[in-house]
Length: 158
Image (cartoon, rainbow, N blue to C red; front, top):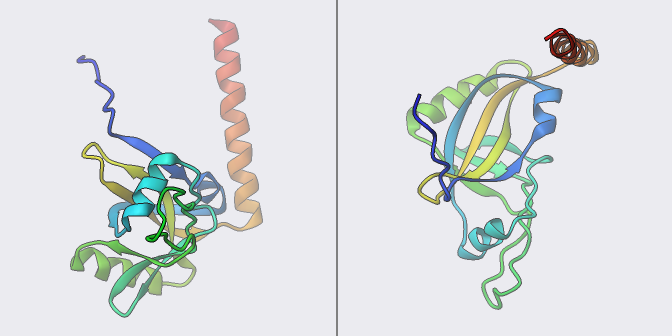
């Protein structure tokens, strides 16, 4: 098996770890994000947050709402709003599929990961998700605990 060479350009900026607990992710897709220059610089510096954000299809366009990108201190005149709506870039076919998915009851678009790809371009992974009930969350937690116990038992026996 060939060794994987880690790409220096690939970098995870922000991850919505809570989304996997609160939502049942049916599928996901990668999309581009329209950013201003100071936003890209701020993302490279870190400190962004997508935990409280969501995506919505409005007027035939896909928007990221309430994502936090910290201000870039060196940008004097061209500062950006920290929680402004940002346009997400997908093909028309994908946009139609996303719109149809969100029209079903209980479905929503949840941002999962914001990252720079191997070319250094900011991308976002969106998940088509359905909210979990409390008993579903407990079931997920019980499965996770059981898997941990299995790993411990296998490790002790080996």
